[in-house]
Image 1: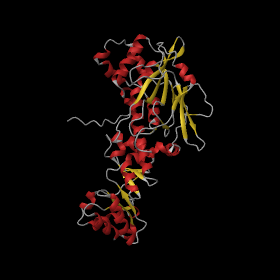
Image 2: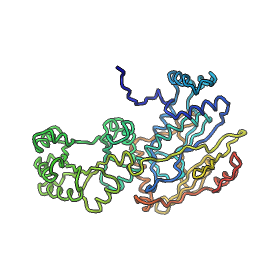
Image 3: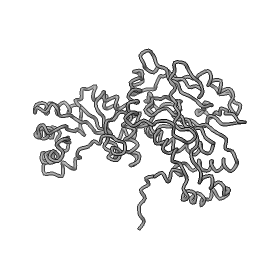
Length: 457
């Protein structure tokens, strides 16, 4: 009987964690000797609907990939067995055996707010090396930026009330759940139900009991009391298995050992008021009310506007899948290539997918109150007076040169960034109205790309 596959990738398979055409291009570049230094940038062309900004996340996993990327003998043996590679010269396999990322990386720090058209990451290396890393960089930047942004919106809606990631079982697989827990914490969540994420990332684990716990006992009070006996310091009771109000009165019988009750169904606004009254009448003013059940930024904002008496929110599906906008189209495009010993800008002119040539820096300007007021894309070597340069060196010649912040520091940066947004960019519907311009230097770059085509700015 065949043993099942876990499909959890380790560092020994990083070489093959890519799209097939990346490898055929690498083989083609090597075979034809077309290996100039090239610069690629990852960015989102435009913000998706109902997103006023994006909150970057995933850089640390991208850096780990770049520093550990290699091809094993097993990888190479499998690739050599494929029909597509049968005409590739034997020397190519030696090239893959020695393959390492030896290029340079600049990036905006994790937890930074960005807008459409702005680079998250810039990669400069020999063309085959810079090309190969596209797929992995995009997948890790896409998913974590998507979910960190969603989590930031949900935490904003909660108006300072704690939000916990309840999405482990709703994510698109166990690995996605781990990444989602990380991104949700960056976005502002205070804890996670994902135990592996809690241990690995140093996030507070949160959870009590399910309806099955209640249903397995003869009556509700017996179930609550049994839980309180084992976890007196963390007695939070799920009170809507049968009748919510009766559940609230039953939980109140536990007395001051009760720390919280959870509402997971019904009209949370009305129920939270009624439950609060039951608890307060029993002298349990300290008991917190936890709300869950298919929540998102829209429902949370509406509930609080209607006066919901909820102290903490548990959010799962909508956050870890970003259900209303479940995909983020970060793209990775060639912007500069070495020609005749000097870097030259490269542009793409496809309808709706045109790109700006040249390696870039991103500058942010603040108004007198410290809020963001405009961004400017500039040449990578430009300096704009009064502007904050957001892209910083992370890897140089294949070596880490930046001190990667811990997750708490990234979360703190994200909070500061969200707090610096103009108020209209913290709305949940519509499209952002935030100016992103080009420096005079970058405009001039577009006048002489490699193909000799004028870029229409």
